[in-house]
Length: 247
RNA sequence: CCUCCGGCGAAGCGCGACU
Image 1 (spheres, rainbow, N blue to C red):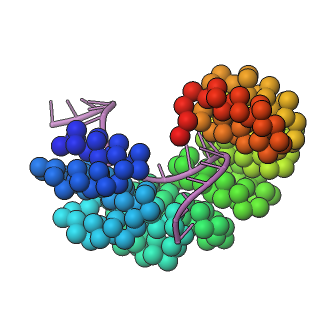
Image 2 (cartoon, rainbow, N blue to C red; image 1 turned 30 degrees about the horizontal axis):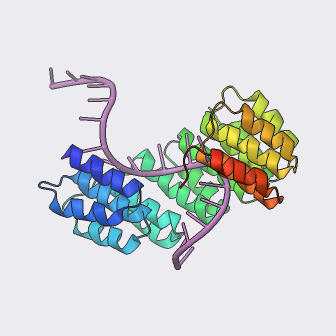
Image 3 (spheres, chains in turn yellow, green; image 1 turned 90 degrees about the vertical axis):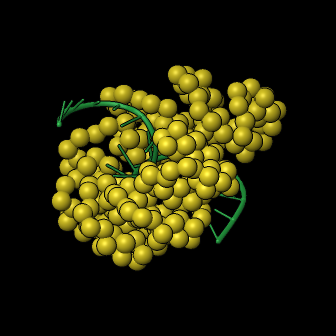
């Protein structure tokens, strides 16, 4: 059964929802994990009603089931439905709480998010990141920085969220933050790249691109659109042809 | 019997498509 679910999840991640559904239908014995994977497949590919229908028909549910549907509501900004679902979860674990917080954050409801965060039975690094980036993204930098100072621990994800708080404004700040990070991953590098592009210094951006330990598809797209937008079509074309993979 | 790992759920990046 595990092997089937791996395949199902693979179809889901590549957006082949039809194949995933077919696989789910012909699976010989479907355990709860397979059901969950199918719900997630629907939810992630925008088939919310199918996800809910499956959810209603499920023989049993666990944390993963509830959280998957909760997240689907959150990502589509259906806050009321998310709240109602959250209240129905019998024994919420920390992930359920974080998912509900993420829903408030996604909707930009900062007041409710803060209130909810304060009520959480425990706070994980995920919930700290969610409450921080919600404020950063929705324009409350002052509170975001206060949250940053209170964070009990930080990791690559929190640092990237911090970088992105300044990508659309202060490229000097991004550079300084980037240099002060304890470690850097591809997403941090992409933030530096995006910020340099934003500053308008294309040569510096190209330099960052070349200095990256490796480039992801996002890095290629970033530099490519920067070149195209500044009418450097020849260079853009060269970059495009140099891309290892295109989608 | 226990511990760890393993197939599904929560936090950070570009463009486009969808709503």
